[in-house]
Amino acid sequence: MTSEIRVNKLTNRIGLSTVTFADSGIGVTVTGRIDPDTDSARDLGTTSVRWRNVYADTLYGDGSNLTGISGVTINNNTNNNLVTATGTTGTLNGEANLTFDGSVLTNTGSTLIGNDIKSSNDDFYVYSYKGGSDGQVRSGIQYDGNSQRLRLFTGTNERLRITSDGKVSISNDGTADGLLTIKGNSDATTTPSIRLLDGSDTREVSITNTSGDFIASVHGNDNAIHGHIKMFESGIFTVATGGASGSLIERLRIDSNGESHFKQKLKVDYQVSGSDYCAHFRNQNPNSYGVWIQQPNPVNVGYPLLAVTNAAGQPHFRVDSGGKVYANSGTGTNHPAYFVRAWAQGSGSGSANGSGGLSSVSRPSTGRFLLTFATTMPDTNYAIGCLGNNNYSDTSWHNNEGTDNVSVYFYSNGSYQNPSKWSAWVMR
Figure 1 (cartoon, rainbow, N blue to C red):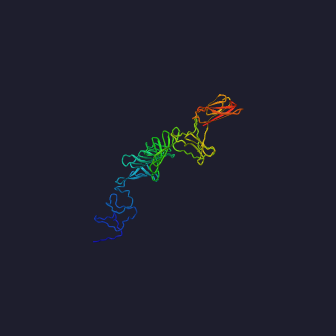
Figure 2: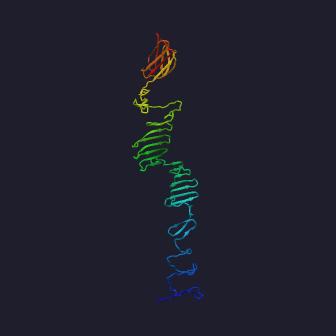
Figure 3: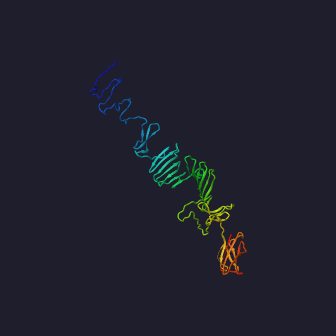
């Protein structure tokens, strides 16, 4: 049977504070809202008489007095501490060593396993650690605020350093520190300290260091070395070039004492100004040798050891490997040049006023003069000339030609005469 009681208002009996539904089996069904008559002034139950269960789709309001809610605990809840989760228990923790004040993220904690971002005083660190409990650094970046330098580590070794004054150091153990220092392995024969590759990795310039000997090499796309420069710890400097076969030939060598060796043709093509020289050779030693050109042994005679040409390549002067001298001397073509090997100019007393190529000049008897060569002649097939001056008609000749000496005679008016002036010369 359906019953209804329709009222506008239920009020308590005088002297009672509540309206009670006495039958405990009776429920109340509400088809509308239940509203308090005043905002935020009425309670649903009390602290001692509570509703057992409250079923609702959504709860609104202050939940600060709610208890027994699992997974919402925040430990160490302090201003600026960043919150981290602990396992699957639902517990949150405010990290005392990891804070964020709205503009600066700070980590002042100790080493962490995994990845570590840490700031201490003026230093800043970014480290990566091996996944595990050993705590060993696998890589990292450090900015040292005191010395204002940036360093990069792999393992526990520093590999790269950039200092505050712009110096860059690359090392395998962190000990190098220079304007630009690249420190390779102890033996970099097969592992260059520096490699510069083209886009296809087929051509390469490499620098290696083997026990203090540095080698800069150029590799072609055939993987062969086409040239290199070597600087030895002993002070020797060499340059070698070669072809696609990889067989290098030393072209230039400078020894530690300063001697230079050129193994191929040396071309000097330089435009000077004024009266300057393309090449200037000066020996500071009192025993002053200039330029020494030495022919090989054996040698094919006739090829030039020294040659001077005009702009068209036509010869002005040359000395061939057989020792012959050729000169243009205004004739338009090169011809062999023959030189005076010895000469003398003297007076009737027998002494020479001047001479060349002779060790002595003497007068064994009147009108007869003996010329002794300073250097022995190769044979007696030389030409002699002599000329005397006196008050008579002159006749002069030479005799007794030898490889060591030769005699010249002056004869006039039936007898040998001593000219007041005389000259003699030998050509070979």
